Length: 117
Length: 114
Image (spheres, chains in turn yellow, red):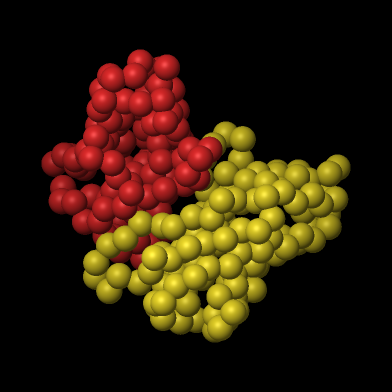
């Protein structure tokens, strides 16, 4: 079974600085998707960024980018120019490619990101 | 606002009881996913329905069941409740059955079993 590990329970960064959240995963699949979700105090789960394993290019969404290392099974999230609104729990998630089937997301335990003003 | 509506937002009930959680997916979305978030287990996938049919099962207990109705709303039924069932239950929806579009999450139902 696939597993997702986030080794940093909590991270703190100064406003406007850059922070990197780590995620590793274990799978025997070759095709899969990886995601970062944000959960602010409102509890809403918000998709931040996604990466298809077959794509070599790292995904980027504005201030958010990933470093996807397929061989190392690593998927880190970099947040540039951190803002107070970025404070939240961040979850790394995995889903295998189902080829027409279906599957749910496997989540890591989360990293609590604190933004210091 | 994700467009996914979950009711109720909060629910307090006693052990041994049965409750029903409701989810209305985004307009046009055919697939509904249920997740449980607890302090012990983290976020876990429970079950998925697509256009009324069960498509995938995760770590769903036998005491739990779900269904998706013709209008595409879904209900998660939890019975013989135990203290350990206290958790935040999320519903997510997507257009596709294989989640090749991003899944939109509702705000969750906070279940407290006392």
